[in-house]
Amino acid sequence: MNQDILKKTVARLTNPPKGILAADESNNTCNKRFEKLSIPTTEEKRREYRELLITTPSIEMYISGIILFDETIRQSTKDGKSFTSILQSKGIDIGIKVDGGLEDFPSSLDEKITQGLEGLPERLKEYKTMGATFTKWRSVVNISDTLPTDACLRENADRMAKYALACQAEDIVPIIEPEVLLDGNHSIERCFEVTSHNLDILFSELSKQGVFIPGIILKTSMVISGKDNEVPIDPHKVADMTLKALQRHVPNDIGGIVFLSGGQPDEQATLHLNLMHNMGSLLWNLTFSFSRALQNPVLKHWSEKQDDIAGAQALLLQMAKINSQASMGQL
Ligand code: 13P
Image 1 (tube, protein in one colour):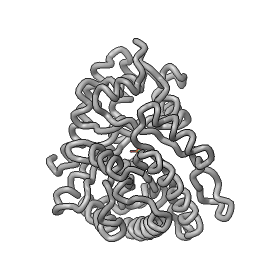
Image 2 (image 1 turned 30 degrees about the horizontal axis):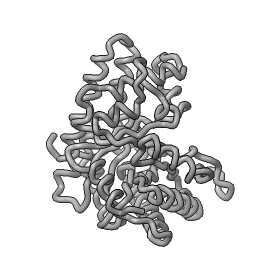
Image 3 (image 1 turned 180 degrees about the horizontal axis):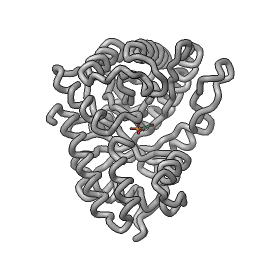
Image 4 (image 1 turned 90 degrees about the vertical axis):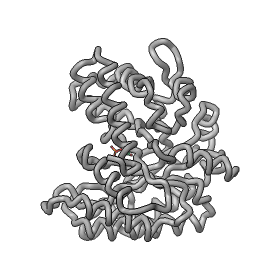
């Protein structure tokens, strides 16, 4: 492992004024989003849409890296230029989702574990030849009165550590994404408790297995109440409790921290990030790695006016700019 390469990649990805665009929706997830907007769910439509995102003029001003799905990293523009060559020419780091999605956790049927370790070293080698400098692995944490179980958190942490080590062996930066889901009616306090506990388990496992902490990026959900909780969301409380969880439960020498948007309304995710940067100086880079909170308006516009690529791209640039400002507390 070359620690210097890993640290430099983390810095490129998370240094202000930039953040990461997550465009690694699996075909299933992408198709679900297309279906809602009556876009045909074909490989060609997914390619066209990703071409729109990747070729957005000046997007590199605000976006440091783009996470792709396996289908996308192999695709090209309609003029025959590979997506990877376009990203490299813009100085945007190429990321790739390498987990294989969720599977049932046998000891607790309401929970999921993330699969994908099988064959991972070989896949990483291939992605590296395609220019990938970072990867993503997502696990999910369900909150209820009885969940999550420690057994499930530990199994996911063990797999994440093995994934991270495999990436670092190739000088590829692993993004570690334990997403605490918004589903349910839990309070923000309960989310704080679960997020904190999970981070403790995760970082203790990463250290135990010898993961180089300055050479990873944590992609986390914000500390927020469940979407069925009726208490109105207090943005200051979200920002404050999220920072407290990160400050108390993430090692200070972590390379960088980025957020997923998780289904929060777009503006709310942006506002929370901005507020966190107005609460004093932070120990680590803290920016965005949104999918929906960057792409929602873009996809909607494109679904309504598929010929207006420039209009959809202008919206993406605008969303990226606003979130870049939020990542510096400048909104
Ligand atoms: P959202 O911002 O839509 O939550 O997606 C981020 C992501 O990468 C989920 O894995």
